[in-house]
Image (cartoon, rainbow, N blue to C red; front, side, top):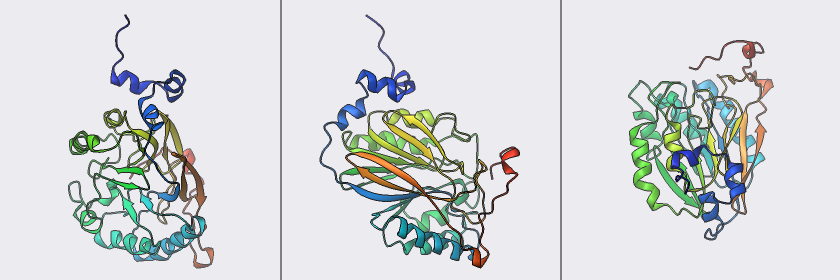
Length: 292
């Protein structure tokens, strides 16, 4: 009899291989999922609010978001809401995005700290949004802290986050379609992926995971994980550029349809009459990528 395959070995199998075998556990459970409804939501990351001059930019972002997804029911904010983690910067985002008129759910990024250990402003302005989950129309959404203070690379997801997963996964319905979002990228080989990202993904192995939204990289990537896709998106910042050299800034409009996620990128159009620009350096693609 062949040796039993370990959970970590299962984790490394491609989505296509598991599906072809018909043995991906979350997918099998998903076939018998409880009732769930279709809906639309928005996912955006890396806003990097710096100063009051950013407020018109974000007011325009919100206005265009509403036009791009008039039926959206919530918005996921994928970390780095602020540039230096100050109360003024975080309040600017809170106030601007309140005009969406829908719930906004955030995760903390490395720029949402004021120092290596101080994220008190974030916790005060976005309370109870560190490690948490909520349900929406029969779906489960999980937001996780993937940060290690202000560090931007060669980071590790904290024991606190992994312990939270250990303690709370048993409370989730493994059959329900599930969305996960973090700040740091979880996709295989994506730059600045936490060193122990697999430890987090391994814990999510049995979930009916349909999409994973990440940020930090400031560029579009997608990687398969089981039946889902792990993505990073371009930033939506006035004062930061994309690390992959792409000029576009924007967000995903996502549709939950028949237990699966469909997404499209919507490009933000800055107000050129006010002097806004995409802050794109056309030479950045030829330079080594530097994280801040």
